Image (tube, rainbow, N blue to C red; front, side):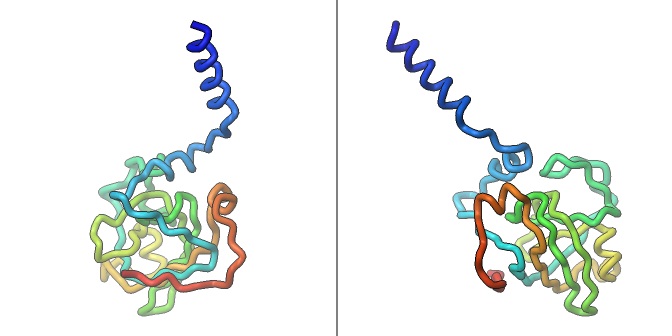
Length: 161
């Protein structure tokens, strides 16, 4: 009986002493990628690939981060970037760029690297075409992510498979 009580108190002490992650970090860590390792990102990293946009059909729905989606907001969906990351998306055809914040997971198609909202697509003149080759530069990572993955390196290019 004493051993059981001691074990319960030890477990309770352990769980109370472990710092709790904030809601944004908790949602981020909950996502599993079928056994893949999550890449580590740093500010100034550049990722190249194809982008698509999504809009009215998803307007008002909750995103994977828990926020409500607005199709004219400057937001984006990425498979692995942490929620709250600010990214500069540049349309490589016309060199127009827009800063977006990652609030959702996607795109579902492996052909695309990032899904941007209709508002962001309008800013870089991509609405009519629907897709475009883009460059995404990470401008700001969430504070919890920077603490977990400190960075002291020059900018690097992340190659897309």
